[in-house]
Image (cartoon, rainbow, N blue to C red; front, side, top):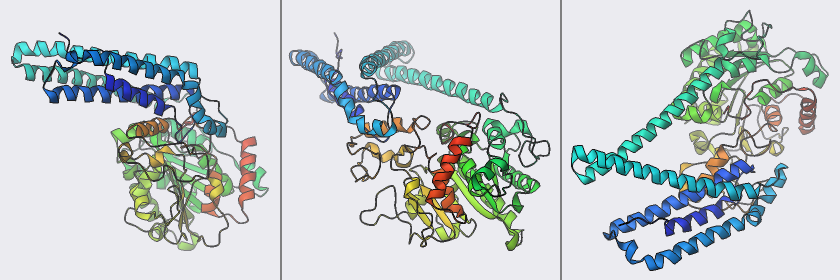
Length: 551
């Protein structure tokens, strides 16, 4: 006799709620594929919660035949649930209009409602059937175990554990294949010509072998504007920028890579430039191409940019496999370049800057935990941190929120050193109250990376519902668990959202570097002129990651 329902009534109700929530706007605009994923995951989560609650109720009641005795009530309830869910599907075209404001701001159209209506329920049903197939497999394995253990409860548990271990093994195998694919991509030299200038790592004169730089490192050292291109903007004599990089294949430890990078910068003449920028890379060892280019324009080519690789995989993968990788790399680089500058007479030293985006920002900030902004600027003349993840301890130590302060632009002390800006147009370059040594956090109001905390699944964050100056929709609401899942999916769209949305800060790097480096005579109009010039003359960097965090 059947003791489990074909369809869970509570599951249908929560699936209906999850589907409607999936259509509401969140932090970034959505493509059709992203909407399908969201409209599949949230209903499945709701169904799983409802079905689990029903199973728990049956277990607590101790009456395994409870459902059969109430079948007369259950059947119409299931029918009502199916009708309600069908009604939600029918309302999809209207419900997607909730996203109109966000889509229009990004210049996108709304997700295709026919595809959402067809694909989301289909994938959801297939997922439920797959779950039931796994449960059936668990039952079969439990019966097999009973021949050995001869205890029903233990054998059932072993059957479930066996299926669980098989699933874990499958996931581990897939991650292993993915890791090997990234390693192969890192070693691929296709369409990456070796630079011949002695000012670039990997050149014939370099201390670093071209093949060891990794794909993102080779892209970095081979890219960027030359002196003539920079002069076309500044109308003044410019220098050829220096780009130095050390890959994981060249040196095994963070300390060895940092020491080699210092020697590579010295060989190329980087300590003789007016500006020296140390970049803490993100996943894959990527340096954001827009950031690297704009700082060279701002410095009129009189700059050396130095970075190392600490990861062969994207940021999300690195956070799983090597959670302290960025921290250790940043510690080694900060120490090595700090020591190197101490050996140079103060009047001959270049101005030293630190930069990091996403995982690189988080790792470099962890070096300064329990330090003040003043202490950071004892080593660095300026710092640009972009898109810092919500788990930053340093931000939690520095940020304060006087009355009326939005979550994306907190206040740090008297604001004379460190400041937050949600976008480039929120930065005043010539503010006399901002000191000569500056720390700038670019911290967008629509960046899920900056706000995705683990507690959001159960606690409503204060920033939801605050008055907004930019594109985050006022209709964004908080739902237990569902909002956390929505932001997690938003988190994965870093590489497809346009500049100015989410984790894409490409439109703000020019302002960021102008604010931190403070070149003579620059103002907001100069920055706009630079952005217009770059749009005309700068080609895309071949092979560069499209996502800001290297993922």
